[in-house]
Image 1 (tube, helix red, strand yellow):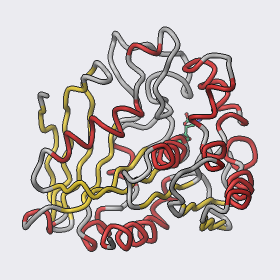
Image 2 (image 1 turned 90 degrees about the vertical axis):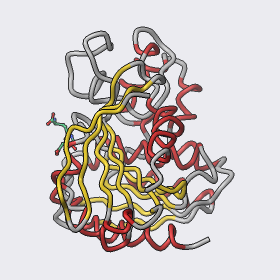
Image 3 (image 1 turned 135 degrees about the vertical axis):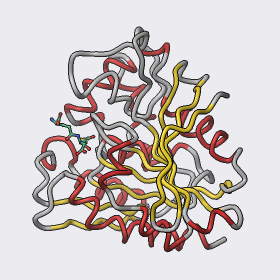
Image 4 (image 1 turned 60 degrees about the vertical axis):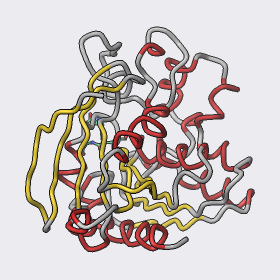
Length: 279
Ligand SMILES: N[C@@H](CCC(=O)N[C@@H](CSC=O)C(=O)NCC(=O)O)C(=O)O
């Protein structure tokens, strides 16, 4: 797998890097932000995978969330990949919520998307294999994300029991089968058979989860997408019905932006650090 380092900046005693590496799963080159805390110079550190939302690249999280300060405190490597396959030969749509920048962290089955859109396999398998080939990174993993990436983090954790020590999300799309963003993306990527959608829907997966990994979710009450696309009450109901542990913080005044994420990312890093240290 070929790798090129695109950025290398000192940050809180460690290094904020950006790499481009070849993904065989996606059939394209992928950009990935990797923050190495100072502790990574002395031995392997656990890794938090961050999944960003619609329209994002690897840059949004590394430049706006302010997570590096906390990763340096806790000795956690942060890995922030791009949100979809990219390139001139990769299918796209003339809209912000489908196609490039909107991979929805699933494995598409429908043409023209199935050729490249395999973000679940990439995030669950190929990306950690690439990260963990570096002796600075251990195979102790956590996952988190925002909005579309919050959906991705919840689904990745629910579908891969034992793979992550902890999971958290900011303003996640908790029930994509029931909201417009998810319905149009799932119809395109997975087809019209809604039975196939359940495997990619956190609220549906919670009923049958084999592992009851506690969920941490933060949601702004002034989020412009709260009632139409996010609907955290559906997650609360699904967790209550299944007995799945959920910590849901509703934050008065906060919107959907990275100002919201930056305000609480320290709490999420502390949550993950506690889980990554244990067991
Ligand atoms: N209409 C907006 C929608 C894009 C948007 O709000 N993207 C969010 C994620 S939404 C769910 O996945 C985001 O993270 N944007 C990047 C940022 O840095 O804030 C638009 O097209 O702008």
